[in-house]
Length: 117
Length: 290
Image (cartoon, rainbow over all chains, first blue to last red; front, side, top):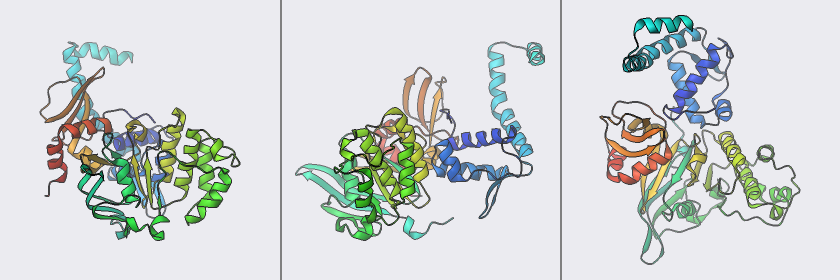
């Protein structure tokens, strides 16, 4: 896995997990890799993976069944979409608007582009 | 979750004074406590005393003053109880003129948790295929791979490594990282001294910086990114106190204090430079008693 330079690694791992769930590689209710296994697979310190899993548990995207392992939560997709929407609105949209103003683009032009995409 | 007591202070150095010659002090009242379940990176400039520190922990050098306790034992006594749970391959690995198979026969019995399956798996990942090759017939890098594999397979509670990636070729460095993530567990203490910060990328979860006879910083990666921000930015304006700035094609590489609680990714090289430039402020940020 290639990590980018700006974001904490545990958050990048969480985003990678989001992707696995959203694109259906990890299905709701499935058991997922253990902390050690994912650490080995992504070549990161297991403590960092543990932190990602704590974060994902707080978002209720995954659940920990003691002694059994971690599972994708039954409504993980909704939880991820809610979280990503919030992130999009709070972090990405303001930057996007800023660039729109900078390059003097109006709504009509943008709507045109949206239709084409 | 509370850790069992033995995991805390697995290595403890208190008020250590050490010098090799009269007049040249290496350590001056040095204190350091390390706990199990972490991979620590030990950093310092050339001559800062990183190797000496590892040797004191292993009981191979004796401080003039102060106490060095390893796994609850005075390190200098080198008791069997301590030695069977500590492994310290040196930077320049010594190998006897015997085959890998015989090396294991000779040395593995000293380590009760040595796991031959693991050893063979690590060798396999490093693409060392024959156990019958004489160690002295191998290249420097190949010898190092054998010794690293052996060190990890001993499953000792403490593993000290001095420049483990020196002499490894490019693909082997990646394999080294992978093997380290396989060998790390919640009880083991791994302390790696190195200048090759890129080789430890994503591997270490705690940083120890040695400077001028003291420990300047001993903090977990989480604690560091909680207090400091590492960012690449085109913006020159920031309201956060800047500790270090470096210009680069991608923009300005900045280390600032983290007053807005934004979590960024630890960059060891930038951290080291920021720490060296702001020793007092770093000390205030990390060692202040609250």
